[in-house]
Structures are given as structure tokens and as C-alpha cells.
Length: 250
Image (cartoon, rainbow, N blue to C red; front, side, top):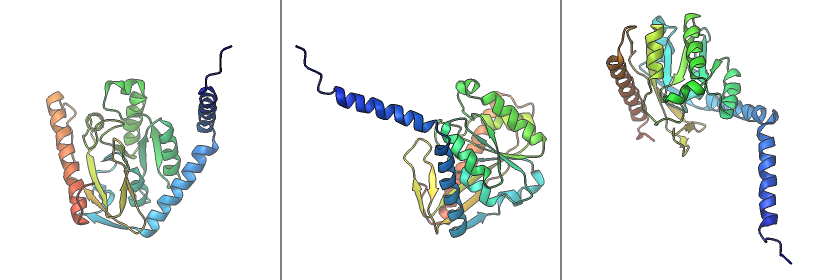
């Protein structure tokens, strides 16, 4: 007579837990609850932190070139709702991933609209909503919205600018403003993008980089030069933000 495999009950428990987790991920109350918690935390940060701008709030400093293209390193979307003037219309590119759904719900609570899609730097962007997102960004600029997206795409290489934002500037004729961000009290999540979560009662430094313009007739060589110009400017702005706070980049 064959004995039952001793690990079978444990295997069945793991399978049942996996099925339960999949059902939980598909529940509406999960993203709704996470978004409520996220919005509460953003309001806590807004109420307890001090913003330090150099040379000035980028929305104010470059008001004469709005609508424009704002770009940050991945993981700093939380900031836009805090520094956006009430009379500036903004749309932020948010991924179609389930994490993006929570982010979009949080952003909406602070009067900022979203465009869903991928900002990936790789050739896979065609399969991930990249074309639809690009068209949405370009049409939003034409409608008078300032658009904000991450320079380093999704699951790319951290702190390395992709070509998507450069292509958008070339197609739209609008300038790119890179923004460097740092906090003196923060938690850096151990992920590819090194997402920074500021803690309550922190000082947050926001440094605006010079505007990058991309000619409509820019070829591949000039596009790459502009990509490097933006990347260097954003890294310099980020380093300067940490210097203002007396810290080293995290």
C-alpha cells in the first residue's frame, strides 16, 4: 500500500493561499483601501514637511513655457500634487500595472489627472500601451495641459534617462524641465528604481534643471545628445537637492 506523500497537505495549503491571494488582488476594495491610506500619508507629508525650492518652484519659474513636459526620476510622483499651483492643469503618466491603479487613485484625490500607459524605454513599450500613452501625452500638451512623466521609464535602469521624453519633446515642440528631489528624512525602498518615501517632519528640496528643447528635425545623433543633456541635468539637480539638505544621494 502506497503511503501519502508527507508534503502534500503543505502543498495544498500553499495552493489554497495562492488562490486566495489572487482573488484578493482582483477585489475592488483592495486598491480603494490602499489609495485611501496613500492619500492620508501624502496629506500627512504635506502638513508636516517643509519644501525648499532652488531657484524656485519649477511651475512658477518656467510658467512662461507652460504647457510643458515635467520629468522626475521614478518614484517621485507624490510631489506634484504638493507643488502644483491651482491654476496649472497637469496630467501625469501612470503605468497600467496594478500598482499604477493605486497611484492613479491617489493622484486623483489631489486634483491631478492621469494618462494611463507605459513609459518604458525598451521595444516592449509597443505591447504595453506605449503608443497610446505617447499620443495621450502629445494631445494633452496640445490641449494646454502640462504633462509629467518619469525620465527613467518603468523597470529600466535607475537614474538613466530614456528616449521617450525626448521623442515627446521633439513631436510636441514643448520644453522639458527636469526636477531633482531629496528629503532629509526618508526611506529608500530596495527596488530597481530606489523609490524615496519621505518621512513626516522632513525637509524636501526641489531643484529645477534648465529647460531642454528638442528641435522638430532632430536626428538620432542629436536625440541622443539631448537625452544625455537631460540625464546629466537631472542627476546634477538631484545631487544639488541632497547638498541643500547636507546629505549624500541615497
